[in-house]
Length: 259
Length: 60
Image 1 (spheres, one colour):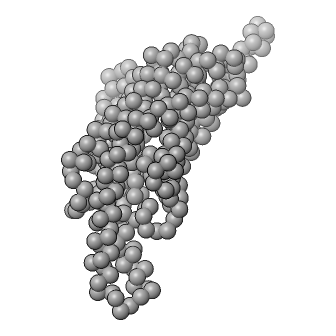
Image 2 (image 1 turned 135 degrees about the vertical axis):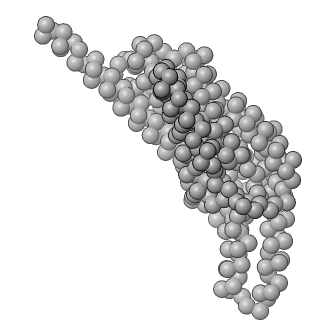
């Protein structure tokens, strides 16, 4: 189990460091915008509550549940349903840091898996520079491609049903990864054409979207958020690519390269 | 002749082992990402809320 252990160790080390760094970057980039948007989100929810509560004053229990469901249709996640949520401030940021570290470890496991296969095939470790290029590929696959169809969204902005967006997101990621792999590793004209078609395909099909979006979150805020997510993700992926390759080369030396 | 067969076999088996171990690690990675970014469980969603938005994972 030498290789597996090397992959896991290097992913945990790289993911821990990069997860913490990106948490700091998010405190300046994305988190302030999320908090601003939540002010609009909560105001809209309160409005909906008032509007829905007015004609229903006579009937309680059953109707109340129905209106709750309607009012929370898009925004029902962390504010109403009664499920646990971290308190604002330190607790919320601590969970964000932990989730960032886990997320980074998850993506590092993918990167290091590729590094293991690659160095097994070439007999040489993956240098940090090549690791950085893999990180950029991750940025293209996991941020740019799905973000074209489903731009980073702020709380309080209604969107198409969650599951349909998750499916399109996954399809965009898989098609982009496969397309890039065909272009980079096959190096033949038919493979390149097939690769480009795969890159374009999810966008030709189109991401699920609502016909009519009504929100009081200002569009300038949404625009700032798209930029903030893109920049913090770029930091995340370049650091994670380089850090994971550096860590994996170190841990993989001890293990027998072919076992 | 027979000696070269003996020395080749472990190498081939080792490469298969490396590939399957890498795949196992990647499945683990997909599981972790799926939990943090895509789980529909409310509590998990709320804990990772800001991370989901910051990574542009489909949220809500």
